[in-house]
Image 1 (tube, rainbow, N blue to C red):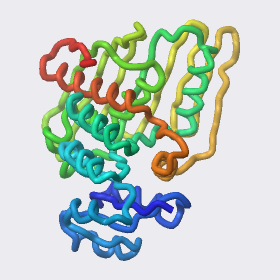
Image 2 (cartoon, rainbow, N blue to C red):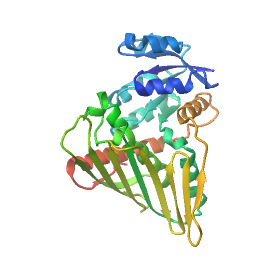
Image 3 (cartoon, rainbow, N blue to C red):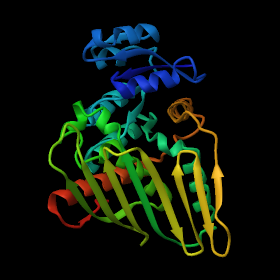
Length: 324
């Protein structure tokens, strides 16, 4: 059993603890770091967590082998570097960083320290997304021509506070909250992007944001793509890959559809899984040297590169080349 610490016990940090504690046979949390310890004291006591105000205090504990970061985006890089320098494995919630330069610093630090780096893209563990990946990799769709993705997420309406309302922490509309998962799916399915053109349409200010995001993408392998997002509407998720011989899409965490020429659509239905526990257990495998973390470091970098280019495109109102 790996003893780990979690830094940040906001809504998402608590979700991860609830998914792991007493359920995973691979990793358990024994410590947490919170800026306001009293605000998390009851939760920490319930889950057997010693509370600290300082990351340095946790990093000096030899019993801690891994650290999970569920903290504001702008502090990810400095925290990843600190954890790696202490020789401990690090799992960082998405996005890894807001710029390619910072993402590369984190990746290089973990490589040099020879510690695993995990990243919180739990949507990769959706059964429908794993089936979509299997279909694409099988070659049955033929040459891949185009990919589309859509996210709508009313979570923003329910939890519009803190980082979600900060232009520094959450640039690009809903990109860092949800759109980044679609981009991760794109990288996983068709590879890194070459160029993006993004448009954000915003309505007059309301208690929660009302905006729509559209991103047109050209990938390095000449696949085209479109990403769309609508905040403050009921949750919807879709990733659709088009090939010369057919197409396949994930339409929910547990549903996928395969369409081939001259055949009836084939629909797949899967049992739901706890993706948060799956990703932490996969991270535990990496900590113990049993397997690499399922998201390659190159994918992590390519995802941040597409995110940064999207933010730059919105600022310039023009197509932007993605940084290599």
